[in-house]
Length: 325
Image (cartoon, rainbow, N blue to C red; front, side, top):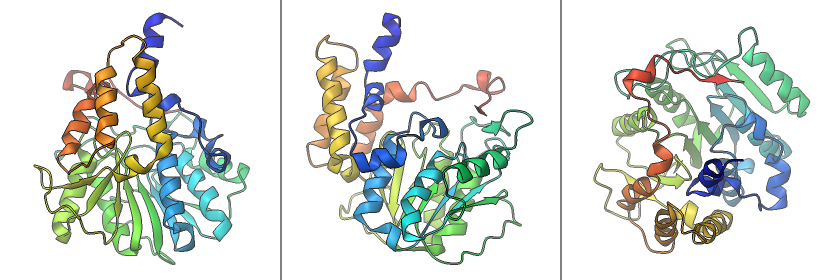
């Protein structure tokens, strides 16, 4: 491995993804799902949701669902969590990739067909084969269709306690919220993945959805770019950020594994000192003090090296495609 590649791996926040000292019960659930999970969110997204589901006993209180399945890692993870309590996991997807390109209410980033399977392979059949191989065919229920289409018709046989929305696009995200919001129990959890992605589709969709509802949810930050909403929660801090949103850092503050990973990264970078050391130290300091909604902007600034790898200028938009291997 060349020195530049090694340096990139230890820089903040990349180094945090190398942490592997998770509790054994979590390792048993997620340890073999790397190849079916999207990186860089794996394993942190799974661990944050694992902790949240356990804390609120969500497997006792309802079903789970996922909008936007991709390679299926999150659905399989939820299936393993909810199976012992005989709860279903509904997995919604076109299973043909993104149904359309980024629209006028988001930055141009996604193209029609992104996240499709290799040519000639059925994404749905691959997903079904994996479900069977993990012994989850009685738990995970694939639901094929474009849920942003007017004819998408899902009748829930019960209530959801946990929903993972990973649609990337504005229209798909807003449609998923429209479909599922009334089917989520009070105190249930809705995850919006890629909320802080530079395409802005997810964030804009959530903003419009909650404006229409007359609601002001609390967005709990999950490293690196997701948020968690707890249905029915009211913000304790009366002051939103400059955009009018309420943010909370409690999930990262209370997550001992995450704080350990950040401390380890600071220690590694101090041996140089290496670039991004100051960012890592400021982030650790952020989690050690009282925070307000405005601190979300400091978080985004400290993570700027991470975001720089995401945004696609218009000149590269037509050249770019995302394939699910």
